[in-house]
Amino acid sequence: MQGFNLKQVCKQIKAAGRNNILWWRNDGRFYITNRHWIIRLPDDKLPREILIQLFSIFAEIPADGQILSAVVRNKESISIPKDLDIVYGHMKNIKPGKITPFIKTSESKHIPNLRVIQYKDQILYVNDDYIRMVDIERETPYCTGKHSPVFFLDGTFAVLPMRQDDRSRNEETEFINSKLIAATMVDAAAANN
Image (cartoon, rainbow, N blue to C red):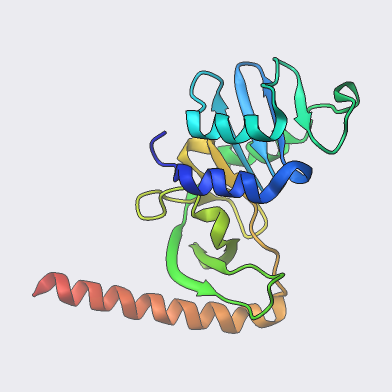
């Protein structure tokens, strides 16, 4: 599937494991999520590698209207999330952002490395492992603000940004913006030579 990094998608499905992944089929589409990212694909476009990874977890493929989760054994008690309209409702107002080369790292194993995405004058932080599920060299992120989902591939993939404390955010925004301006000037100078 063009635009996806299938190896990374399978890695993230495996990392989410049996207890955190949901997979369902509804109205001719498959949905796969760990509740921080979501993939939605026409049911005839699910790549074989992803299908194999999901089948290794669930040992079945969901029927239309069925959701699979390893957490709850009785499939009848799980309903397909109704708040998807809220997630995909953001798409009508999305604008392009920019994936920057900056990654905010952490010494803690419990806090992921966060890729910096610039959206207008805002900085968004997205789990770098999640964002690598798409080809970040070629794909443009789209969003509506710092607390809304970041969309790729015409909404086929969406990931939630990490919420940050606004107190230190202004300093980080100024620092990152100054680095982006400097990088743009260097790129422009190199193009003129």
